[in-house]
Structures are given as structure tokens and as C-alpha cells.
Amino acid sequence: TQLLEQSPQFLSIQEGENLTVYCNSSSVFSSLQWYRQEPGEGPVLLVTVVTGGEVKKLKRLTFQFGDARKDSSLHITAAQPGDTGLYLCAGPPAKSYKYIFGTGTRLKVLA
Amino acid sequence: NAGVMQNPRHLVRRRGQEARLRCSPMKGHSHVYWYRQLPEEGLKFMVYLQKENIIDESGMPKERFSAEFPKEGPSILRIQQVVRGDSAAYFCASSPPSQGARYGYTFGSGTRLTVV
Image (cartoon, rainbow over all chains, first blue to last red; front, side, top):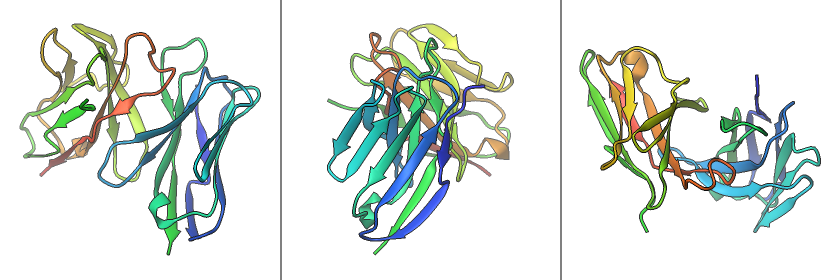
């Protein structure tokens, strides 16, 4: 079974703190995407990482794809209340058209 | 340049009624995917369709649920004889034919189905 496990499942931090969310699998993925979902809305695509070892930055968010393309991380610097939401990693396992979603990380940033 | 459009946003049905959820993909996207999200849970794949074809329906319950994506018009997810356990948010996503899932999907805002 191809799974994407995210950790932590829940995270509550103060404004200004840094945090890292992890997305791990035993399978190789062709690419990985990170989404953020706010209450009552659909997931919004934040980034796609394709190459092993790739690092992408989006303002205060840094995304990394593991060298073996089995894991990814999302690091947020100086978190703000607007970062609050459900963060989902997802992707197509290599040699498969299927698309797998991670278990999700619920982030709450307190002002 | 409209995104993925889903309607209605909210749908209330009594037990035993039918629910019809509609999804219009982004312009130029011919692949449509339906996902279900229960409260406080992640997204579960239901069905993958291309125009006039069901490619993968392995995530869809075999009874009461059906999906179509006709040559003209939106994709429809149909739930017959709804039960309370069908209450969930149903999301539609689309992707262009050349990319598949490699660069991710564009999601609609979802339809929240409540069965009373």
C-alpha cells in the first residue's frame, strides 16, 4: 500500500515561531505537491517539487524534496495567524497514474 | 479564467433522496477527479473521469454512487437514496490532459452535503 504519512498531525504554535511539517513514504514519487486548505474551502496548491533534493521557497515557506523522492518537508519561518489551516502533501507514486494524499497536518497559529 | 466550478456549495437532502453534485473543470482540462472529505479527515479518492469515460472508480462505493463526465456539460456525481453517512464535503479537481497528476490538481471549493 502506498501511503503518505504526515507529522505532526496537529500543531499549535505562537505567532513568530518556526515550524516544520514532514511527509514520508516508503514509495518513490514522481513528484510531490503541497496544498493548504482553509475551513469551508477546497485545497489550494502551494508548490510542486519534482527533482530529488529540490528546494523551493515561497516567501516564508521552504519546501524540500528528499534525495530519494520518498519524503518532503515544509518549513515555515515566523509563522503568522494567516498560516492557520490544513496542510496536505500529495503526489503520484512513480510508474502509477494514481494520486495519493497525505494524512494532513492541522496548523493553528495563535496571535 | 475561471477555476474549477462546483455547485451547489451547500446541499441539504433528507434520507432517501437523491443528491446531484456538479463540477465544471478549468478551461482546457479534460481530466476530472472526485474526492470526499469527512469532517476532520483527509481527502479520499472516489473516481477519475475523462470525457465520456470512467478511468478509475475504485474509490467509489459500488451501490448508490455513480459519476459521469459527458461530452458536453459538467461532470456529475450522483448519490441515490442518501444516508446520514453520506454527509461530507465533496471536492472536484481537474488537470490538463498532458500533465495528469505530475504537477498537481486544481480543486473546486467543494459541495457540502448534509443529510438530515
